[in-house]
Length: 249
Image 1 (cartoon, rainbow, N blue to C red):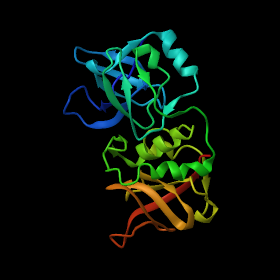
Image 2 (image 1 turned 120 degrees about the vertical axis):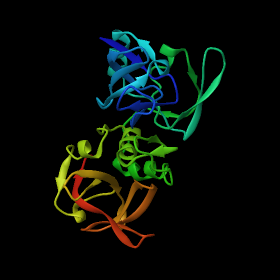
Image 3 (image 1 turned 180 degrees about the horizontal axis):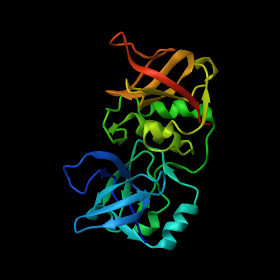
Image 4 (image 1 turned 90 degrees about the horizontal axis):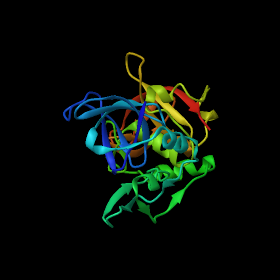
């Protein structure tokens, strides 16, 4: 088995080994992974954080040893907390990284970072404040940064920055935590999941106080939440049908 680490800011994770293939997620700086298959130009990987699989360009990561992979796996994650900061490489060149990048592997890729970071679990009350960091970020299928993010990427990154692990997709996240019977039982920071006409969970958002929800739909935005689902305050209509409320923390 071979292993790798992302040494660039934001690397596309694709469904198939081709530049034109669907973007299913993003590998952000410091993410490390197992290498499942290697081809001439592409590598199939499984991310350590959430076990998500996809294809990355061979030129967009650095290989590490099994011992280094295990060492990273056993360390408490150190994450960047600035919206955008800079990494300095061995040639004193700067390149940007986004909030939530992992800093544990800096020495493995000969990089230096002097920005703000965090390496501990935060209280649940901090979830909403972290979510506001992404407010107005444009929706991007497969995105995980303030420059483009999808609904489950948004919830995953917000929880990650507070020291908690969520799986990647909304349908996967819906398998975690404890189901609540009513919205009234929920607290700010709990997750609300929504399904389509076939009963498949396709959307997730973070519950706020006073029946509001913050979620990625067109952009990261705040809407009303009721027993039917999400009421879009701009369109003056329900846009998502509520399926279940989950308490993860």
